[in-house]
Amino acid sequence: MTKNNSANNNPVLTFEGGKYNVNELSNDTKEIIKGLQIAETQLKMYEDTLKLLSIGRNSLANQLREKLKEYE
Image 1 (cartoon, rainbow, N blue to C red):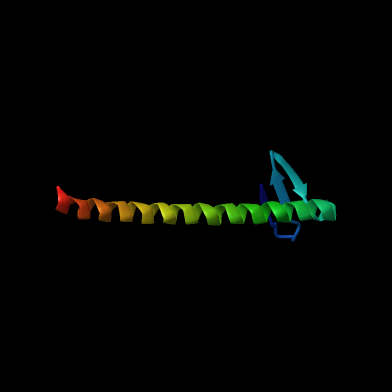
Image 2: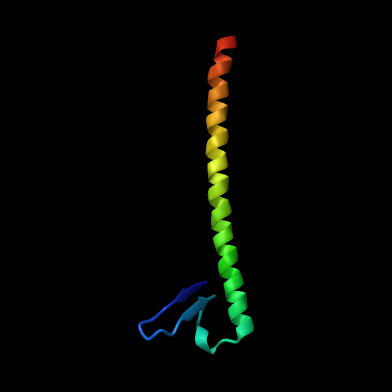
C-alpha cells in the first residue's frame, strides 16, 4: 500500500494493483488507510526493536562465552 502525492495535490492510493484517488474515498475508507499506516509504522518500530534485542543478546552470549573460557 502506497500513498503518493502528485503535483496537483491529488493523493493516490496504490493497493493490490489498483490506484485510487484518496479525495474520492469515503471518510471510513480514509480512516482504514490511516489505521494501516499506523500499523505499518508500529511493525517497523517493533522489527527494529527486535533487531536491537537480538544484537544485545548476541553480545551478552559472547561475553558469557569469554568468561566461561576461564573455567575450561
